Amino acid sequence: LPERERAELKRRKLLTEVTLKSYWIRKGSAFSTAVARPETELTPEMIATYVPLPPPQTPQEPWYNFSSLGLPPACGHLHPLLKVRSELRQIFLEMG
Image: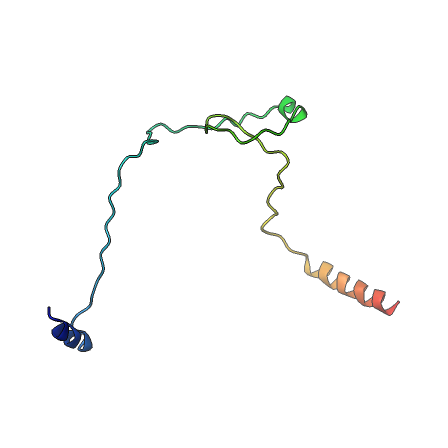
């Protein structure tokens, strides 16, 4: 459509423009139908004789980082009575 007619139809809300996107998906060089399971067997000897190693070069090679910190718990809160008790304690501490 010419620009003038398109603008007129848009103004009258008789035309809406829609953008369509399409993607082509192809198999890459690392494509595989087999699911690789990482080694998850951890023994006490492995923990006792831990020596930090660089990350593995291949995904099949196991790697454990024992020096990293864990994730903090995402849930939990103080009980309401504990909150009141800590507030009262703080008030008495301020009073001496």
